Length: 318
Image (cartoon, rainbow, N blue to C red; front, top):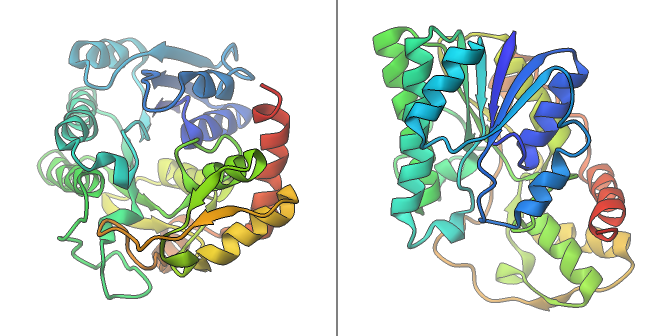
C-alpha cells in the first residue's frame, strides 16, 4: 500500500506516519505548516523521520486543488488517512468561513482526486464533538448528530455526509473515525493536556470550566493510531466508527494526575462552561471492536506519564 497522510506533521498525523513507516509502509505525507499554532512544533514532530526512504513529504495545502491532483497523479496512493484540518471547538467560533474552506472544501478536493484516481480506501478523521449535547450515553454512531455546537464539529459532520455521497455515487470506501479527546506525546499546544502541563510548569493560570466537574473520554494517541491503521487496512463501504477509550474521566481528576507528575499545584480559574462545551464525552466502542478489532491499551495514568516524559525531553529542551 501507498498511504497518503494529510496533516502528517501534526499531533496525530506525525504519530501515525512514524508508525506506518516503522511497519514498512510507503507513505506520502502532506502538511501546510499553517500558523494555527507554532509551526516549529510540527517541524519538530517530523524531525526524526522526515528523511526516511519510504516517505515522500510535501508542504501542501489541501485547498490547493491542482497541487492535490498532481500529488495523486505522481504517487497513486491506494489509501488515505485524511487528518489535515483546522481543529478546536472554541477557536472555530467566529471563523466558520475558514473552517468551511479548509475542513470541507479541502476534503472535497481529496474526495474528487480519490474518485478520479480510483483510491481504494478513504479514512476520514472526524470528532466526538459531532455529538454535541446529545442525551444518549455512551455516544453511539446511530445518533443522528444533527445539532453541532460550533463550526468545527459542523464542518466534520459535513465531511462525513459528503463521504456518504461519494460512497453512494462512486462506491468509494469511506470510514469516518470519530476521535475522543486524544492526548499524548506531540500533543498540540492549544489542547487541554498540553496547556495544563505547560501552565503548571510555568505557574500560569489554567481555566477549568465548571470547576472540573465535566468529563472527557481521554484516549491515548497510540490507541487512536492503531484504530486508524485498522481502518486503512479494512475497506468497509461506508462506516462511522468511534475511537475512544470508553472510560470518561472527571476533568478535576485529570488535572490532579498532571499535578502529581509535574510536582506542582495548578493555578486555577473555574468559570462556567460556555455553550460550546458538552458536560461529558463518552464513547461506545463496540462497533470499533467488532469491525476494527480495536482494543485501547493505555490507561490515562500511563499515557500521561509518557506525555510528561516527552514534554520534559522535547518541550523543556527547546
